[in-house]
Amino acid sequence: MQITALILLFIIIGWIFWYTKKKPQGTISFPESFRTILLKHVHFYNLLTDADKSAFEKRMLQFLDHVKITGIGVMVKEEDKVFIAASALIPIFFFDNWEYNNLNEVLLYPDSFSEEFELQKDKERPVLGMVGNGPMQHVMILSQAALREGFLKESGTQNTAIHEFVHLIDKTDGDINGIPENILSRQYIIPWINRMHEEIREIREGNSDINPYGATNQGEFFAVVSEYFFEKPAELNSKHPELYKILQKIFNNDNGKPFVER
Ligand SMILES: [Zn+2]
Image (cartoon, rainbow, N blue to C red):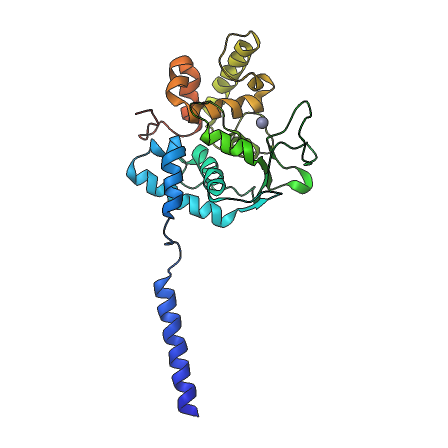
């Protein structure tokens, strides 16, 4: 009887050793199907070097491990997971240690919704994405249709999910005011505010190709031009070089890792 117990104990210990050796933490391989989606639809990923592509994949898995994605009346498919994680990573990819401590869950709605998170089809101002407040703190709401359109639509400068993640980054210093104090060095704050006001004026005067929604306020301006920056960097650089330069500073993208169209 004692021998049987001893043998059993050895088997258990052996199994634990084998199991922990076989599945060390953090080495879960990146699904090939995710990579296929990235290569096909995520422009930013395709601009990265091979080493950066691997880093991007690793951080995507970390994000998906930390943030829950829940469908509200929709099935969450693989492409939704890839697009959400990619949108989260794109704006902070050039900061090595950034984590979204202000986000636990992303709710995916089929289409647009109201500010009270009710589904709506035909109101004047449909909401396609939102960063939660109050009881919805740490929750982001996205329209599945808008999420997909941001990546599947060819050659656009708009991307709803990137827009919302930029709001979330902006919000980490307390408010969404277009000034991301946690990532922007002090010396660039005044030049950035001046640049925002200049570009907003141009939009209001009808002399700009930037999405007019960006002229709503500084917070929306920052989110809208960030979409443009990550979706069409070369175009932004040629049409708004000053704006492009300062966005490179904001997103820490001017230190030996130039993010340019190749
Ligand atoms: Zn917004």
